Length: 346
Ligand code: KG4
Ligand code: ZN
Image: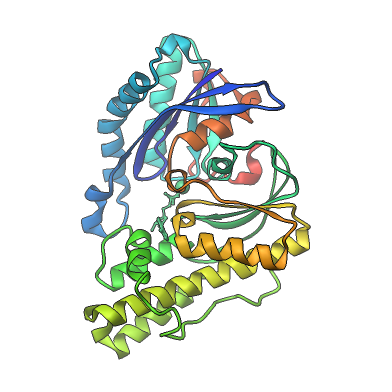
């Protein structure tokens, strides 16, 4: 089976062709092609994603990305079995570009469309290499728009255990980077600088680390950095101090994410814990999450996606679509849903 997937929920225009063999119970996935066109340069001057510009770039780039993807996969539309497309959550006008493109292809070539929840997509980025995942599966999704602990008792059964009450983890990286005069997106820049820094140099808060619930809050941490910069404005200009602050900030975010995930894993008796979303590209978080579980809950399997599948991509949308085939529908019955929740996803 061949699935063509399209992802335009934020600032990456992406298509992929995924080949699935081996049947429904034991599928094997092979990425025939995957193309991601990043809009970073367009949004960087604004320090964040500008929705109207994102949509305009998707309109311009999607036909090119689609053609490159098909060419690299050596397939024609007649060979494709299903079209998968991100339905939401995301920026409404950005999602619409992918949805309308998918509808057009489905109409022209008589194909069915599988709508995919973007968060489910991130979750399934961990399933590319091995689909024999043991349940309960606890997902920690950390991206620019989301920070959520999601329990899966089986495929299609999602329960949000907790979420951020304010900023998402990636958003905190981006906002702190902006305060420090660093480029957008902040996550990769901060983590690169943090490599040379001392993570204990600045005492930053770990908001809600000990709270009983599974919620998160990152705005207080961001404000703590702001006050620190007001008190010591030379930090941003001093190479050593900047590296120390980046490392201290990154460690604070990682500590909260890891502590909350560990607690939720214990409470939910998870057999597998899976990290995903753009912030899962963070080396410190990847390493320390693995080390913590090895030490504290060694029987729990920890899944972490390959780095190229951490930020937005269409491969994860195709994998998720495979497990959601029963929702395949005609081009007439598809709309974007910018506020789609994971619990609405079957
Ligand atoms: O999943 P994603 O591509 O888009 C959303 O669905 O939001 O995540 C993008 C987010 C950005 O906030 C970016 O700063 C963050 O992921 N990010 C990182 C790293 N790479 C990307 N955060 C921390 N460390 C990284 N290495
Ligand atoms: Zn995402």
